[in-house]
Image (cartoon, rainbow, N blue to C red):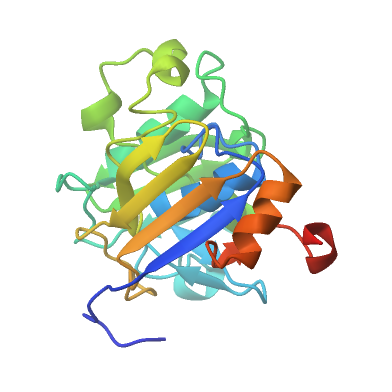
Length: 244
């Protein structure tokens, strides 16, 4: 892993046939959505390619061994970093995680994935940096269903039923939490992301690239041409024989 405080430089271009339709994990449904969302949105914890779980927004992964899981697995305690900030500089606090969970479970929101999160019976936020999940019963895959944070200060006046029709929430979110933030979007063609200078993580030291571009191509032929012309650094989800 590169050292902390390394300056971001260069750019990385991802190409795909799909264009991300929802740059928001509440509504993500395609691989293209998830690729962009992973850059725009931080998570409490994340899983690496070996399925080892590491803290991102939390100070540690909540486990029985460290007191993060108690009451026979019915209570999960999330301890937030104190330096978390949204891309607009506002603090990320415990109530933002509670807000996301309420949105996720509200049928008016139309969240793509609400199952799993529905195993949470309720959430307490005793202070700004502690989120306590009360589970309906011990739930083995709880680490994959820790709630995200949503910017209540930016979205709070929008009715849940209107979130999908609000571009600054759905297609082009203006307030995000991940290592990158949205610079601009050319609908149907390109997302351009730049570093979020407020991002803080327990595990990551980045971002390291000064510009991420997600470029969509309408056909395999166009995608192949871009890849062979080295206009794309990473061609998403396709093998060499797909591009021949």
